[in-house]
Image (cartoon, rainbow, N blue to C red; front, side):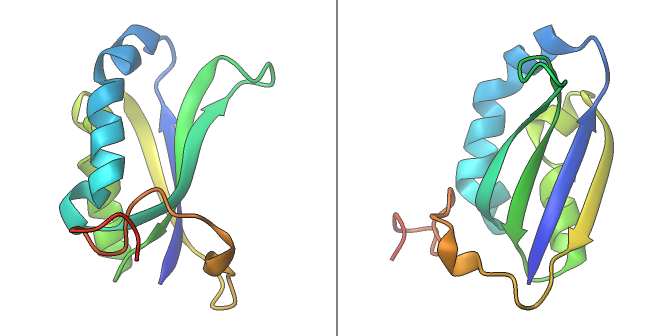
Length: 112
C-alpha cells in the first residue's frame, strides 16, 4: 500500500537538521532498514522555496504502522527535530509506476 508521509519540523532547528542530513539520507536510501520503500521525497519549505519547514515522502509499506515506524525512526525524528508526523493512505489507483523510486524494491539490488 502507498502512503503520504508529512513531517513538520520545529522552527529554528536548521543547524540540527544539517547535522543529521547525511544520516537522514541513509535512512531514506535503506527504507529504514526495510520498513518502507521511498518512492519520492523532498524538503518542505516556506513560500520562498528555501527555508525548510519539514519533509515529505511517498512510501510503499505493508501497513500504516510500518510507515509510521519508518518516520519515527528517521534520524531527524530521533534527534528531536520533528514536531509532527502525518501518515495518509493514498488511493488504490495511485500510479506508483510513474515514479522512479529512491529506495530499491529489493534491498540487495538497485531497482530490478
